[in-house]
Length: 565
Image (cartoon, rainbow, N blue to C red):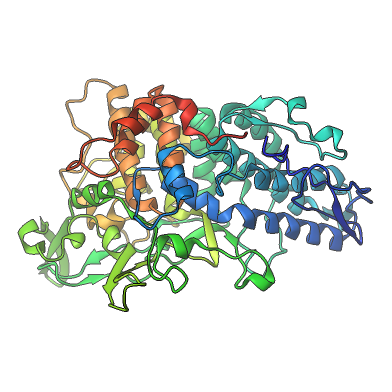
């Protein structure tokens, strides 16, 4: 197994003031004594920062594997062989992006921390290290989840490996994603109300994963949908920090002839959780995502990956709706809706449909000679200072996925079209709310504070809207964006809404490193490998034939995963 390195068996530890940080070396490294427990503030802080440092090694890979294996990204002729093999699901153990030992290096650090931190030490009645302890447990769960998504069944252990003999992977059971979820859900549940650590800085302050978010993810992957919905709901509506959709601005046409648009604040505040990267190699691990997804001096402007034709088609197939108002007695009153005419967008086709596409990528042409690409690409989604793990709208979309599979398709659809608030849930003068039977069955999942979540037209302010309206205008007014009345059963509605959510995830989350995981999760839930295989094999869009070799390969779930050996 890659020289028996998958556990990153470099259990040689850097010791200093009781701090233990593993190094990623081979199993034949010299083994040293692990030293004392972590029982001082300096010990725990530096050891925690060591864990975050190990996460930097997998940051770029999180984006690359999630995007290149999916259907919304396509490689260019400049892509390396390693990237092409990832995209074609033919990567071997020697592929540069197939480095499971980096994930196990995080796990080894986390296991050591969990085993040695003194969680009983108290100061003024508060446990001193409990925040850091909970944060490390959340990071460990996230890391195992990434391993399962990328490798399928993975060796599982929760104690620090202290000797070379313990570094034999055959000693440990292999867990799949459901087994990992079932282990970590009860492991993390006691820390639900534990605050995030105060330690941070140096780009790391946003790297701590809220326990509710990772619990929501684990439940979603584990098929425990109502629990997942509750965790996401409680995170977003928490009384101390409610998260409204207004934190992510919309892109809108600002005039009726669709020639001027507002895009301010599109990606700010952007992420909820991110892995902070260093600014230069001298300081540590830096990100090279720009060299893959954008034009840079280092790649002579030959970017290696961009959006796929399939995403272009999906984006242009969306219906943008603008509400037209009239001034009646000094009040703007809705009178109609209008949508762009495709004929008017002949010379700017990327602006037709969903506007998220048009503001993500921009290209320019500069002729600098034969050694440089003439077309230069800038990708607004790629931030090499902070690699996104959780964005606000991604949490809303996962919550919609959980609501839907928990048996509440109308509620899930409302997250896309209207946003959830008391007004939208109960209905207004212009549209009916969620049906009473679903409201009763959903219970407190449809409890949204009326003062924190305010929909259009309520008290003159608005901070809540549907996720689809981020790129498609006044979606709440779009009569065509609806669950058909003639669907035969609730299960039919659930499948219809899940397909909408899947498309919305593509429109909203491209280049966030989530796409292949989303497809994988839905395909596993449906017991339908062809769902994933067909989408990935049609990256090149409807105008090109399906890649039948790739389709056949992906019908076998074993080919979804990178080899551990």
